[in-house]
Length: 161
View 1 (tube, rainbow, N blue to C red):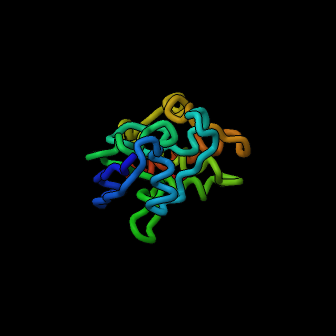
View 2: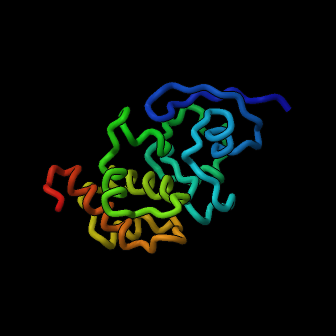
View 3: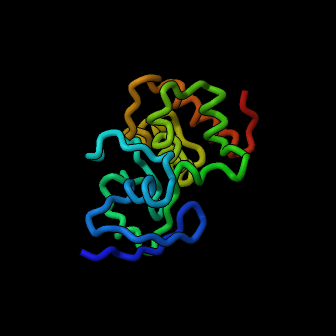
């Protein structure tokens, strides 16, 4: 089989790559484009470690064929910060110690960003539902939820304690 040419916008920048028809978006992001922040946890869409935003929807990149990204806008965890300036979510995850081993963190951050893009003032229940597809084996979820709620407040310009 011949490789397919795909053009997409990744983290706000135009990107082009060649991929095998059966190659996943996760594999292309990591192996072809060097965006290794996106992790493979399960390979079956159950853990959320490989979450990316694809045209305003959170998807498990292990379940998306890379060829399906033609013309798409993709945001990975690398696209959250602006240069050396961390996104409010990243700052609040650090402030709340909402990570331990860090394996699930990229997927949680991406899912939280998608949630806050849709709903800048979520309730705790809405945050829990918004992150429900992301599994963490280390932190429990309380610190993660608090970090997302405080990031939302910070993004709305409110003072965060």
